[in-house]
Structures are given as structure tokens and as C-alpha cells.
Amino acid sequence: MTGPGTTVQIGAPSVRPAEQRDVPRIAATLTVALADSRWARWALPEDGRVQRLTRLHELDAGHRAVSAGTGWVTEDVTAVAAWEAPAGAAGTRPVPADVRAALARELPHITGPCADRVARTRELLDAARPAGPHWWLAHLGTRPSSRRRGYGGALLAPVLERCDAEGTPAAAAVWTWAGVRFLRKSGFDVDRELQTADGALRIWLVVRPPAT
Image 1 (cartoon, rainbow, N blue to C red):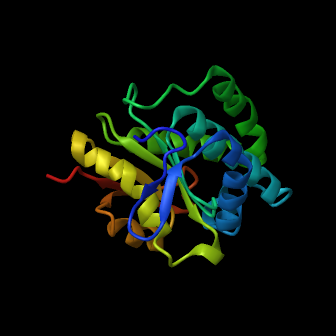
Image 2 (image 1 turned 180 degrees about the vertical axis):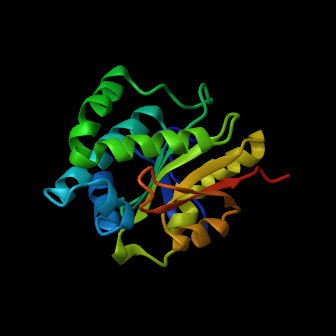
Image 3 (image 1 turned 60 degrees about the vertical axis):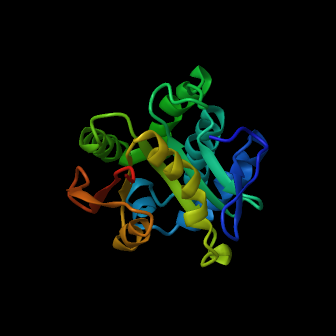
């Protein structure tokens, strides 16, 4: 992956690796994009939902991805992609202990009374992920005002090109069929259909094999 501060021009949109200065805007963008999503309504209590979602994105899509070198943003940070890399992937870094500790400490409080079903669903998803090394798309979102500009595909391209070059699959959990249709444009397809631990929602596990 390209180093911090490097800008990559992919078609019309310009994207770059996320930096520490971007963390507040990463959290704000993903929260604006996903505050009314099916997942947010299921995973977070109504009381303080926006604040909870913002803190989750700050930690998991902001600090985690920036510290690991696995986040990408548009120049104006109105679109974000945050990945989890295979262990030891060149150009990435282990998530620092303080970020891991903050996630472990705060996630149960962020999800509040929904914590048990969220944790059990995460276990189901972890068990369904590809067995070998793969890139996991943890967060992808674009502000409504910046949609239909090709930002999503541009943000995915740097990692997907790397997957093709290195023979590594990519995968994601998708909570809407519209999300499945979007990711299919980048080569993903449904590997299996799951349900949340409480049976309330469907989840599609999508996988993209490396291009040959």
C-alpha cells in the first residue's frame, strides 16, 4: 500500500491513505452515512445512538485503521474505507495496544443493552470468514451529498489491486441487498447468507477472489 501523505488518482476521484488528522472527519462521515442504517438501529440503543455511533467509528474506523495503515479517504474525507489486513501484511502495522484496549473497554458500553447480541453475531461472522489470509472490509461509507461520484469504487481499488497482485481474497459482511449489489461491481459475490444471533436481520457474507 502507498505510504501516508501519498495521493492516488483513480479515474476521477482522488483518494489517499487516512491520517491521524482525519480521524474526527472519518467518524463524522461514517456516522452521517450510516446513522439511519438497519445495522445501527439493531446494534445500538436509541438513547444516544448518534453519539454512540460516532465513538464507534472514531475508534474502529478512525484510530484502528489509521494506526494500522489500512484506511483510505477521499481528499475531503466525505467518503471512507477502513480495512483489516492479514497479519503481517507488508506496509501495514499491528493495531497498538492502547487502541485495542480502548475498543475492548468501550464497545460493550457503546452497544449498551445490545452488547450481547452484537458480540454473538460478531462471533458468527468471524467463524464464517475465509479461512486463509484475506483483507476484511470493516467500514465503507459516503456522505449523501457526495454519492454517485465514484468514490466508493475508488476507495476500494488500492486494496483490491493489491489483492489481485498478491493472490489474496477480500471479504465483507453486508447488511443490505443494495450493499451486495454495489460490491458486486468490484468483483465480490455472496458466499453465504447468515442471520444475526437473535435472528432479527439477514447478513450477506461476500467474498472477492483475486483476479487471475
